[in-house]
Length: 111
Image (cartoon, rainbow, N blue to C red):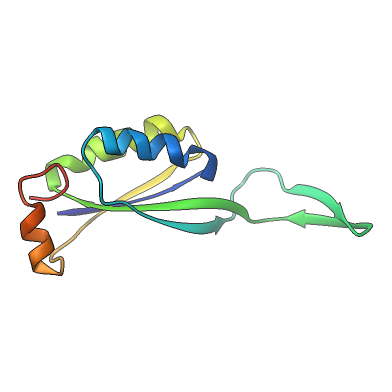
């Protein structure tokens, strides 16, 4: 099994989610995250003071999938996520609860 973790723009999440659901990946974890990128700093004013934001909002998407499905998931995420998407794939030695893993065996999610 592989764990796919992606950081994407929150505006792109709905499109990515729809693509993953169409492919049969229904177990998706999503967290709000912030990231510092080399993009220009967003500036604005707050109560008359100049404000610089160095952190950008991101959505962190996590999926545990079968080894042979990881490339499909990465393609779906990067295809819909655009150029500001960061994806990692890591091996998963074991997953618990075992009953859930066995119930998902043979589906698009886990084998």
